Image 1 (cartoon, helix red, strand yellow):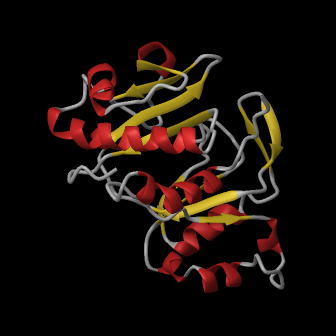
Image 2: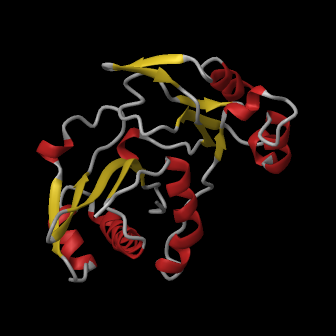
Amino acid sequence: MSVKPIREHAGKALLEKLLPEISGGKHKMGHAGVLVTPSVLDSTSNGSWDKILEQNPWLKTTNLVAKPDQLIKRRGKAGLIAVNKTFDEAKQWVMDRMCKEQKVEHVTGQLTHFLVEPFVPHKQEQEHYICMLSHRYHDEILFYHEGGVDVGDVDAKAERLEIPTGEALTEAMVTQKLLTKLTAAKQGSMASFICSLYKFYTDLHFAYLEINPLVMLDDNTV
């Protein structure tokens, strides 16, 4: 089976569109943000900053997060995430890096695509980690009650749940196998979200999906 990677922006756009329906209205995805490409270097193009602002006026009314969208892992550790920025600050941060060479660990290449999205204020303890991946005869979900830049070796410490191919996932299975270290007040909403996310994962034939951080706010919205 062939597997094709997609950008973070594309994945979030799919979640924004489909998650409310898949979850029966229980969950929704925040704004997927804007994909910024080298077109911003040409003020006459349809991808210029003026066009982006014209199509997304909310960029001027909320603080933002900016980061490369090129399948780069550990962007936070590499200093490649700008957090809680105004539009002008985020724009400058992107322009300082657009089409410039960047070394990440042992790889050097050009940064050409950036995601600019709304900043969601939250506390460190509200950050979690989740990953879904497919094996030959089963899918696997990894969950860790802590997330973010310093999550560490999740392969070694995450809770794991295997779902044989064709079998259904239930909230009871999720709670029992994955959420034992999560406070009881959060377990119900998180189990519901994970089941909805897994349905999204299987319905769209994903082979790998990772969210870090997965943020659950005080009102239990994810």
